[in-house]
Length: 373
Image 1: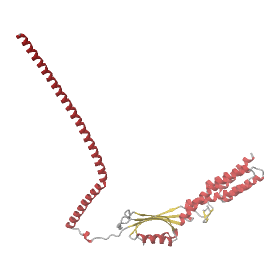
Image 2 (image 1 turned 30 degrees about the horizontal axis):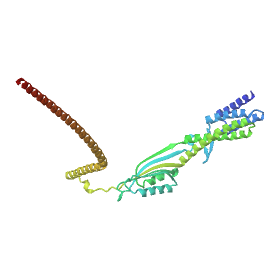
Image 3 (image 1 turned 90 degrees about the vertical axis):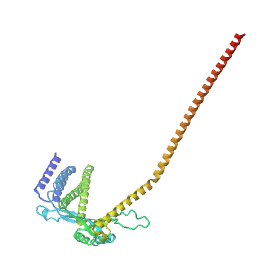
Image 4 (image 1 turned 180 degrees about the horizontal axis):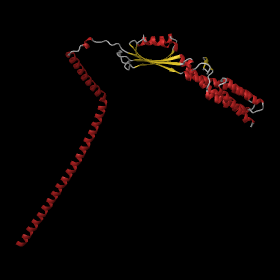
């Protein structure tokens, strides 16, 4: 009962302190620890003190009503209170970025000049990609006739030299488009700084409670909470460092393309009936030659397939003709055999008839002889 009463009293005291706005985050947390230490000296279990401390710190962490001064890697950041700087009086945290599309007839010289400008302004190249679309370079006698080079750069420039760098780029190549953007991250920046301050306060008090813990259970309970706080602290510190880097260095994306110098033919500027007729005739003749050339190359490319298909077709036709001839020969032989068999049957029948006729004649002559006698 005594433990419960102490935790309730501690939480009530800290809650009143928070809502009254008396004192800063560190002072409030220190009061919680002092209360916990006093109870421990009175013989109360330190685990109960930890529970009261965690409840107070949770409330302190979630409300974030007041702003103090957050210590970061870059120094102390004034986050403001009701009596200090307001939101409009804080140092604005602005992130600048720009996207530029350029063309140049002297690609290599322009790219070298851009890289020199980056170095002179204290910047660095974060990402670089170069493309060459010349796919026929390996042919013998290859001569470059078209623009093929492209460069993609992502550059980080110190923010104080951001505008100077952009102005310097205008003298290098032809700028086709330029898109600039400014992002204000002031609110999220100072919110993160305040959260870091609160987490550091919790970490400090938890370390002190770890040293004062008398049992293994108390040490485990404090260590678990300490691990959670340190993980959150590292995450917010990394986020704040990233925002510092974005504020300190602006981002410029450059897309550089190569173009070929165009030389205009004066004869092409003449706009008469004769010139249009001749140009149309030339174009139609060129298209016809292109079509014939394409058809010829298509036949040449398809020639192996045509030969293979022709050979296969010839073999199939040859096999079919052979089969037809064999069937015809068999049919002729069968017809000849039946005809010879019929002729032989007719001859045998005629012979039999002749034999019968001869026998009849003989019998008749014998009968006539007997009658004479």
